[in-house]
Image (cartoon, rainbow, N blue to C red):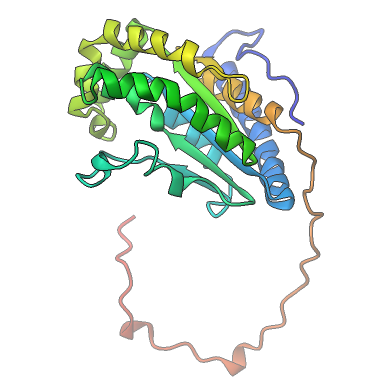
Length: 273
């Protein structure tokens, strides 16, 4: 099990020291994630982790840090786009079911069926009748998943109005992040209050004993990453199955038995760096 994660702080309280602490702590957590991965594979566990919250709350950042060192065959990320015309006519949960894990897999949902309670509700993509039905059926659906043997963990990333605005502005100034500002993101920026009310309505209905919500204070990205990963590691009681280092002997290569083809006959990438 991972140790309890302290807040991102340092007696020196300077930027360099905090960065060093964060890097060291993240490295420790990622090693623990490897142990968790091997345990999930060994025990044939089925794990679903849902990441929800406002736009620019840091969901993608923590998912990236979780998956950085993991095997993509075991830990998979699901980030579904806009439903197709056909999918819009299906049972609401239908397109999510094929994404659920088999034994020995962990699936991270970067947004999930909770779109119904956020963007779909605020933007008027579903009727009041459909919304009320989903508020009732969502807890039943999740309870059914848990009964089937799935470990369901739900995170809500909470970010303040001021911090979200700061991140939106930063994205707009960064060509590598500007793609993150979708038209829907900009509309959500204008409807802060409506999104807050929608979240407040959804929580009491879907915060069930089988799969409670875990709220992550996300105004500080680095703290949020450490706290979320540390909590994830604490939820599943795993054991260390890390294999011992293997002995890698010297290679016995007879270069006289191999003649490399003429490099002029191959198309090499230009070495401009």
